[in-house]
Picture 1 (cartoon, rainbow, N blue to C red):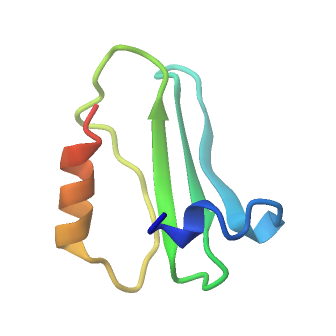
Picture 2: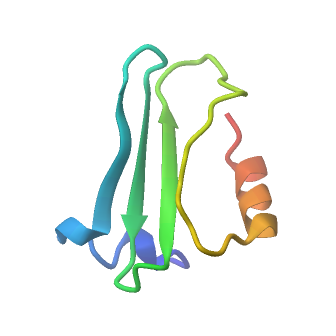
Picture 3: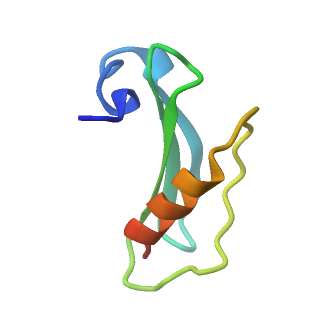
Length: 79
C-alpha cells in the first residue's frame, strides 16, 4: 500500500481527525488519516447518497499541496 497514512496509525488517536461529521443534510462525512510523519495525510470525503455534490467544498490547511496528484486523485475517485 502506497499511502502510509491509511495504515501506520490505525490504533493511535493522532492518526485520525474529523473535518466534518455533522453534514447530515448531504449525508457526507469528511476526515483526515495521518501517517507518523504528520505532514503525510489523506483526506477522505464519503458521500452516502447517490446524489453528486459537484460544488461541495472541504477546507484543509496545508503548507504544500501537490496539485497534480490532487487533481489525479479527484478524477479517479469522482462521485
